[in-house]
Length: 153
Length: 153
Image (cartoon, rainbow over all chains, first blue to last red; front, side, top):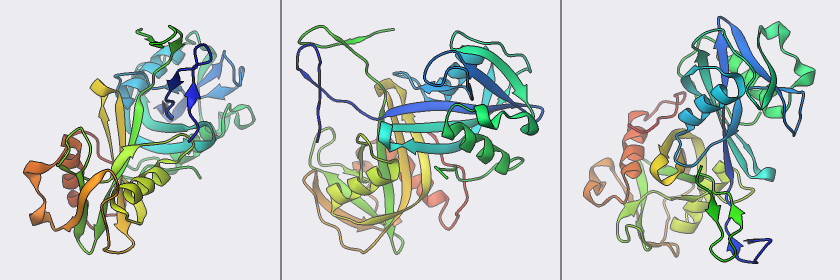
């Protein structure tokens, strides 16, 4: 097994897969999107998501990301999907959530935020494949409450 | 935010929450348990579970743990639970799985393996709270196929 070595001193550090937490947040049938202010994929649209922090539950992390990226308060509903991107050692926990109000505003990592209907989703300007997946999976369980979370399509 | 510094050279290393993958594996109504050969909780019973490795999907990781700890081949069925232990920055993905055969044997991290009926589960000798949770949650969805995964009770 390959080990990760400190570039400065040569000491061995263990590197583990990372957990991304995010949410598809809706308000009255519309979905919250954020336009990325940072690389990778600056200028493209995404759902609020980011790395889980130490000593944080996944639900708390997803709510924090919505707050940081879209100044939005959300209520987590259920686990929508568990996607994995083994090439970059990433596991994504994506929740379904409801916005506390239709207000949102760009945080420091976003250029712009907006609520969109299904027809208004900018499919060609989405930041990552998993944003496509999450939006489609979200729609496929609309109105349903007890379902197994999706994985990579 | 607290940063993690290399003990040797003082370089900053980011530490992230860790992902544990595991499974409740059954064969003809009986469940696979492993008696731990390592600390913490050496001598206590657990389900096959351990840290997800780099570039591994959670399902592949859960299957690897069953192989390593119980010399068992399993087929992953569905996601049973997502438990989080924020105090130690851990997220556990626990799957429901079926054994390919009733054979199992202790791997290097186990003293003993066995298949037990519900009545035979050694409740007072289980290694961790999440083993209790997983066994109870597994039983509560017996025969059901489409359910939202459980979280901490």
